[in-house]
Image (tube, rainbow, N blue to C red; front, side):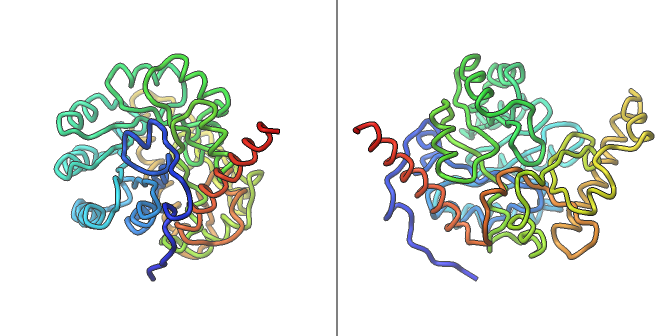
Length: 342
């Protein structure tokens, strides 16, 4: 079902930052790449409202499906789109995914985990931009030295694989130690949050969880309703899904099964020879569990989300979410200007 809405450019002024200049978008917002959730419909809808969106390449089981999605994005997006690549050795599809992205000249890539050196070099040869997920200044400096175009500052309030540092500390820290643009990821669900991150020094935000409860998302109604019904206090960190701490909704099933690996899994993860294979097995098993819960009704309800679900009160269209975000930004801005004048 196509949902027609008034374009935001007819309602709100643009918000100019390094991110909007770099990508040629109207508002400094990336619809974050979300495993199993992000799809072409969502990104196309986002582009029509002046923001951009990205999709994890791993959301497509085959390269043929991935190419079909890229065909659709290239044809229908009214602005740039991005693809998220897992850059470490656990992603056995990385070489093929990267080759396809290079062939299509995807406007920008977001790298997560691993060493992005090769990705950055090959993308820059084709005029493509690369943004790298970072959680601290040490790794941020490394990817800057490798030539990254921007940093995705994954803070403690992020969904999925979150960082350890709150945004109010992480953004100034990265601004102090790095010279490339910083995009804040995590914790934003309204216009006030967007303005706050920009005032901290970020050039934009990467926002994911509020977009899960949208008509364009292909996940189950149970998953969408959970985003509406649960709040920030219901988000917990688990190591059972991928071996790396990941945020999920604390459903009764999660409470029953726990959030820590059992003693055998933890022991095998410490074995130098077996560690790589154990992580790959844990990741595969965890992703299958997430997929089953996201797409079907099941008692094994493991839903990935971040604290920003606190801002979600109903299932809406992508354009409604963006409208509320940008409209809220300008409302807060006007109030601040009024108080300043007084």
